[in-house]
Length: 573
Image (cartoon, rainbow, N blue to C red; front, top):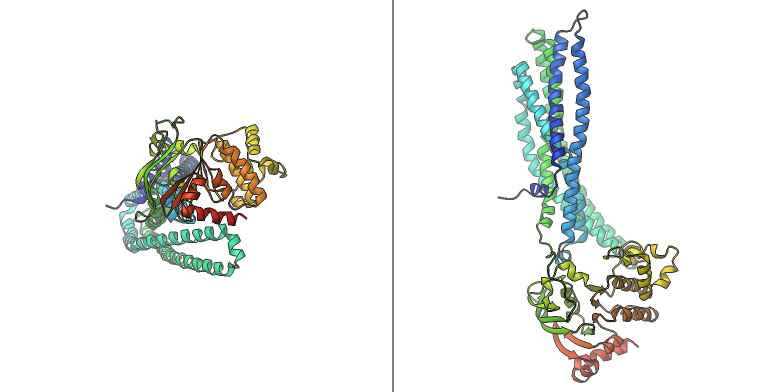
């Protein structure tokens, strides 16, 4: 049996049980008062005379109106709170789930589409969960109670009035299934459009550099037209449903006024009874209209939840807190019989066996596509190897808690990632609160303090999206400062100076030397200076180790390494 995605997601909610009980109780009381009011009105009208007005009934009516208004207001707020709380819980837990998904998910899914799932799809659930579901009980009570009272007051008139409802449902129910399909397509197209916007706007400099505005405008216009057509299809359905519901209500009213008026004139029912019947009919209009669209709204919500559910059932990274402490003693990094494939077919790393000595620098060199970055990803546990394992302190790194393991690693990339915030926020990213003295101290060690203090806002300077307001060298030095604040045991450097000018490179190199001191360092090396100074050099070629040794040793025994060094020497001139 296919799972109901909406129910699965609603199970994520921390329901406030006390508030639910109170709000349901108030809602029931309010509904019961609504059912009593027409009877009081009937009594007043039937017994009305100028000479003998029963003021007590008038007082009862006023008190009932006031109490009902208060109960309705409080109940509405509580029910809205319950619904909004449900949306908050779903959003919060889905966001937490997305953050825990493995890198492989983000490799194969557009980030803009994921954003759309967490915003638009959940927003489409909002009105159904925060309005439709909370009001469902009171609407059912009103409908059942009103119909019961109508039958008691005049069963013939009631049956005549209700005879048209089955015909209405016969038309509306098939439309609900069509709504589900259109809603699903609409959410997919919306997600695709947001993904498209995300891709274009994050690379807007590329777009403008290559004068691709016209091309991207046409691409966007095509996607917008698809959204336009789907919205029109949805509008057509509403254009069918709304007149049916309105027509049903009008027909009921005509039956009541026509047939009911005839029965009053014939003396079969009293004027008070006729007024009470009108009151009950008016009370029926809103809940019946709401319930008649409930099914179509439900199918639309199911369409929105389908993709959310697909994300929700995706397995997260193996995040857990291990009882195994990370061993700082004898903390060589051992890579044993390691093989890895992204697609499960072609191995990008093949049977690697490496010892990375602690507190030494190991350089990994080799042609592009040889698997250097993939090895870094495995050390960080962004992916898990299909064969073999990596050991640190004599323990497989997969046995450590994932968060604890990543906390011992400092990673400085070739293009340092920056969040759109201040310099201070970027320096402290991923670390707990640090006092300003330490931030200044590590900024100085990273050779970043001088340029930071020259900004008018200092450490509070906004860096822009992806750090665009900073130069490459400035971004790298902030990344090094971030690594200093992390104080890692294991340092991964993806040739952090490869794309810098000579002045920036020297400042970054000086900062890196301070950072690398007394740390186990693995560096993806292209610069000849980095290669020469390494305590160990590993040559990777097509995912295999073809040489391990010192610079001079490999220069004499490894032809491809000698050619690689010669090429780098020419490039560095």
